[in-house]
Image (cartoon, rainbow, N blue to C red; front, top):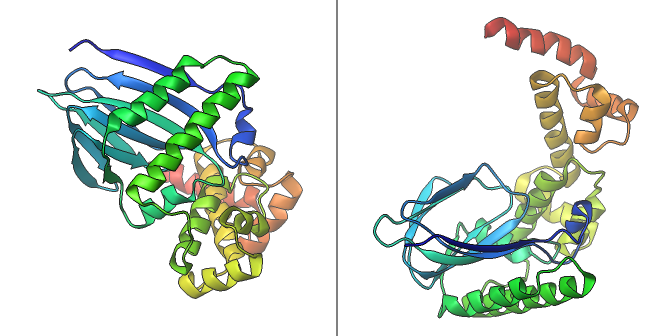
Amino acid sequence: MEHYLRQYTDRFTDFNNKHISDLILYSSGIEYCRPNHSYSLRSRDYHVILFVKEGKGTFEIEEKHYIIQQNQLFIIPAGYWFRYTADTDNPWKYSWIGFLGIKSNFIYQASKQHQFVFDCKNAEDYEALINQMLDVSENTFSSFLKINGFMYTLLGKLVEEIGILDQVSEQQVSTLARHYMDLHYHEIVQIADVADFIGIHPNYLAHLFKKETGISPKQYLSTLRIKKAKELLIETSYPINTIAHSVGFSDALSFSKFFKKETAIAPTTYRKEYKHDVIHHI
């Protein structure tokens, strides 16, 4: 089979503004694969949904393997490791859409339920919408609006067809909050931002989060930032100011105070002590 690839990547929207949009397209495309064509990534910063029009292949995520066939779709949430591979004898033809935004909660709800594969009535319908996106894929504001209009239509059809609802239950709140903090810990994000992303009051978020996890959202975010900072201190030679920005602080001083408060040791001291241990044991 001839390899066919047609794709569009949004270059109109500033990358730093994508995550604060309600929904924003990253990429879309159509690919007819050669036998055994495989693709994997440690993680992406955005969600991807692939719609299989013909053929079949395998999909791996969360240490699970799925066989994907005609008129099925599979979801890859942001931050997940994955691999998918076309069949040897009957390689698949699929279309895809990549997106992120505040209104993409339904993707996290699917991942919370460990549900990544769904049947659809006709994957060609989704390919047709993606083809319309590709037909207007110019780097202009008018094209940007048209393409995102097609994206909303596609996602509306998808949510309606496979029943992923964007209503948040109590059990889903902490998962959504953790997902958001896992993706945005490197930014100057507050708990109010997390609550706004989920669509609930910060006090209610704190109540549900602690009820389910035993700690507050603020504690979770602090622990996450400390963990990431320790990794950077040991595994890199980045200056403290760079590490501070990498874990959501505006300057090295506020980061150092935070780090010492949480660990009882200054970041420079931690690096000297533990980086030496790592080197010594190699």
